[in-house]
Length: 423
Image 1 (cartoon, rainbow, N blue to C red):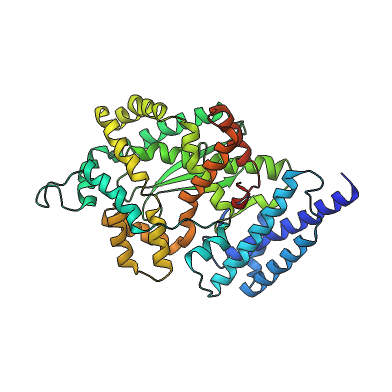
Image 2: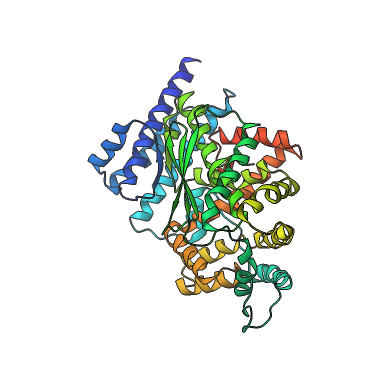
């Protein structure tokens, strides 16, 4: 490395360390902000003792952005990873500054907030878009009158899908089988640290359905919320999203390839409200289709293993998933509810009713989703838009070849690439 290159690297390392300290400092004001930290314990202790003000954090973030702008561009040197690192720090620090402004009282519209925090804006859909899909679902689950199975679509849907609930006493067995399969499929294509591991916990009274708490040293704690019934399709979804090749694999590869091998300390801390989350959630969602590249493969596994383990009638598997495929087309309905709620166009009750109608959610599930939106706001785009952006990026590079897809997926998981870099 040239003298200039070494100086640039040293300057970048200094910015990265100060950024990590700022994330921990902001975590003192916003408990959800620091999703994971496995850097030096004294850094966390220092943040707790200092309790920097929001003004001080904002001022230092602005200073860091200016410092970073003065560091020589790595593009000419031909090192893509260094250039991606620089862009990563720019976007992450900018998002941190935006989060500071929000905590100080600045109100942002939904799209402005998602652009500032997640480096992306989700497409907007009119009600008519969802009406078309709802009409198809109405035909799949015809009504029989309110006195029998309920008049509204969500009531009929809940009645129709009751037989596909995983019994609570079988939940861990089914989930562990799904994890085992997803892990085996991932290990066949991705080299993971030999001591990687995670524990599963079942919890209640949470606004989310599942959560991966990455602890560092290649270990995660995955929590599954059992407040509401868990349906058979969620077993693979959760196993892939939270575990393999999702969050657990993503965080493990970042720790191995960037923190340990390169010494990039900015990856030892994960700021939840940042562009990194769109990559994290997008790869976690798309990871399900990387692990099971065809519907035939997934259906074979579910019919032979998961449905019997859950005691669910295998003969109805195709019928169940035909309906679920239609429901997946309603995915952006949650974004629309969030956009309207955050923009002040509807209130909490109207958001619940809107989700009942257009996301076909029972009231309890709609209420829980609105609680999630109120707490995490525009974060909701990271799941569906994130998945769509990651899918397009990977498929553009891999084509239809499953092995190439795994290769490109692994590269993305091990890189600092962010949403605006998914071209």
